[in-house]
Length: 70
Image 1 (cartoon, rainbow, N blue to C red):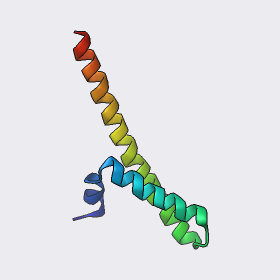
Image 2 (tube, rainbow, N blue to C red; image 1 turned 180 degrees about the vertical axis):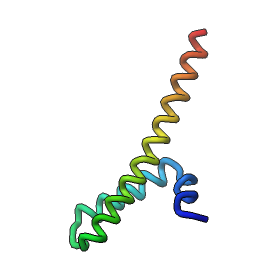
Image 3 (cartoon, rainbow, N blue to C red; image 1 turned 90 degrees about the vertical axis):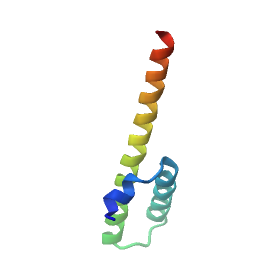
């Protein structure tokens, strides 16, 4: 399974937890420039996954509210 397919299967909580770990490693310092860039890129991917989950949740809430108003 490709990394992209694995990422698609991450829950919001899993992506958020991994993102927190990435941030901690970046804040701790002591990594090479190359490793820091890789961590940053991974963080961006994880942030995107979290945002998609949040956007989906917002859409579901909006749809439920609209149905309730009808």
